[in-house]
Structures are given as structure tokens and as C-alpha cells.
Length: 460
Ligand SMILES: *Cc1c(COP(=O)(O)O)cnc(C)c1O
Image (cartoon, rainbow, N blue to C red):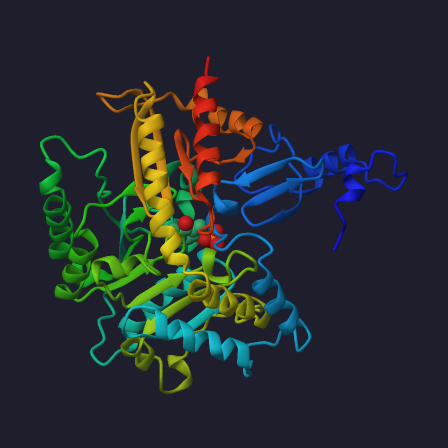
């Protein structure tokens, strides 16, 4: 452990030259989703709970859980201890041809806590990989299940879906700005409308929204189901699309329709899994069991890279038999014991600390704060929330819901200003995102909302 004092003690001759680090950061580290020409280094040296500390000793509340993955706060003693304990046994053993008790325990736990029927965990290292695996599983399943349907060679995905950045996950994704460039490399999928409760199509009232979107989906399924291997969906909230919230009953309807048309359902809980929306998994809120469930971000509490693609026994069985039936996919660090130890500790903490109880309390408080303090601001078009996921969409015209000119970078400006008040936020275009660790306190929520208020007040 490095001590903080070295970064604060100006007289220390061995004190690192952070200017130099910033320069190296700009030059040698190619940051994701970042225009490096504009990048301004922010070097975080340590963290504790929901608070990040930079190399100059400035503290920032981690308002987006280190981009949606931190669950119980940073440096949680139980997760740290679990990783250290595992490290004293073995850091990594391959999952190809052998296993490790910690990894076995995690697979067993996941089978217990995920919706009924999901029994078989295929581990990999990040969310995008878990999606690739799910897509390949579904495709191969139809070629070797008891009643094969080899003409099933495509997928249904939502219009602005985001499922990660590898080419397969980009193919099912639909965020134009992320994906346009790679169009020639992608496979075709069938698209259906975003079930967006804020921007409903003309003439669709909120109480008819679910029915409307499901009818659209059914039309696509009826026309193409013979060709569709699976539908993939982010349940309840479409994350990177801008925290688009689905109407109640939509997910349940998707499950019923995919079953009716003999199409597999892949649910991507990479962002919403592990307590984020108020239940351990978002699927639970609509009593849905998918055929394939993808988990990542929060699985290790946000400590180490790991993901899981969990399948039903029906799917698993189709892969049993001769060598040709094998799922030919794998990553070197699949099923890493250190990550599994962190994941098990994180699951224990849910029980020890009544995490879901805190999510219920704090999400209610967050909602009240956002509505009472931000709703009247002329730029705030919508405040939407599911558990500890909240989006504040800034618009040019509240009535027409007109988007702001993206070139203005309004969302980014508000977040930049929020930093002056000790809060780190990262927007999705002009939707401000509040997605703190699940251990967030009332006082910290107040500080986050104050920082947003301030950020909004500083817009010219
Ligand atoms: C972040 C995310 C992914 C991709 O996960 P990575 O670990 O970044 O590859 C996939 N799906 C959803 C819904 C996500 O939010």
C-alpha cells in the first residue's frame, strides 16, 4: 500500500512529479471512449467507500460507481480480505481442463441466486465477452438441439441497444455514434423500437405503451421467427442508450412472446445486475427467467474483471455429446479465482449489510431530492429512476422534448462543474447519470444533488 502522505508532503524530495505522470497518461495510456487530444488527466491514487482521492489529495464522491461497476464501495475490508486470502492459495488456474474450488463455489452461488432454471455459468472477463458467448451459444444451440432449426441465423435487438464493444456485441448494439464506423464488419440483426417511456411515439399514451411496443415486437417475430435464434434485451433500463426506461410489463411480454415464437431470450444484466434496480437482478421484478443471462460489471463488487454467461439446462444439454457439440469459445483468464473470491465476498456483503434495504431507502431519498431540487430547472426535461440508477435528461425545450445540440456538450459541462463541489459524474450525452455505489448515504446523495444544482447554475 502506498501512503497518501507522499502525495501531500510538498517537501518530500522523493515526491512523484504528478505533472510528469499527467503527461505520460496523455501520451502512453489510450483511454476508452476518449478523444485523447482533449483528454484532461485525473489521477486517482486511492479510494475509500464512495470517495475517490486524487494524487493531490482532493476528494470526489464516486457518483457513477467507477462507471457502473462498484457495489459496496471501494476498499471494502471483506472484499480486500477475500482477495488476499485467495492470493495466498493461488492467483490463477486455467478453466481449460481443470478448476478451482473458489470458482466452483461461485458458479454454485450464481445458480442459487439467479432466476429459476439458470444453472450453468460460462466465465469470461468482461461484459462484451459475456454477450459474445451468449450470442454464440444461442446460434449453436439451434444447430444441435433435439429439433434443430439451422435456418435460425439472426437476432432481434432494440434500436439503441448497447451490449459492449467487440464486433459481435456491436452488431447487436445500436448506438449510432459508437457503431457506425464498423458497419461493414458487422452482421445484420432485426431491430425493434426502444420501449422508451419518455419519448413515446405520437398518439401512444403511457397506459398503452407496453401494449404498443409488444405489438410491434410481435409483428417482427411473426414475420421472421423462423430466422431468429434469439432476442437480446437490457431489462428495465437501457443503459448507454441514455438510461431509457421501459414500461412495466414490457420485459414479461418479451419473455412470453419469445417463448410463443420459439426464440431464445438473452437478458443482458451487465449494467443492472447485482442490486442496482432494487432487486438482485432486474428480471425478478417482472418474474422473468431468460434462457441465457449475461452478468459482468458488478459481479466482483467492481474490483476485478469477470463476467458470466449463465444458461439453462435445456441449452446446456444441447452441447453434450461428441466433440463437435462443444462450445468452441474461451478466454485465458476465464474463471479467475481472485475475481471469484471477490464475487463471493460481494454476495456475502449483500446479506451482512442489508444492501438491498439501503438501495430501497436511498433510492427513495435520491428520487425526492432530484424531484424537489432539479425538476423546475428550465433545462431539465425528464428525471427518471429505477433503484439507484437515475437519469436527468437536459433538453432544449421541455414541452417538445427537443434534444440539446450535442456540440454544446452541456451534460459534460455540468459534470465538469460538479467536480468543483467534490462529486465525480460522467454523463451519457446530455443525460446526467447518478449511479452511486449501493452503500451510498443520505448525506452523500445530498452532496451529489447539490453538485448537480451548482453545475446547472454555472451554465452560461
Ligand atoms: C457495460 C455494458 C456492457 C459491456 O461490458 P464491458 O465489461 O464494458 O465489456 C454490456 N452490456 C451492458 C448493458 C453494459 O452496460
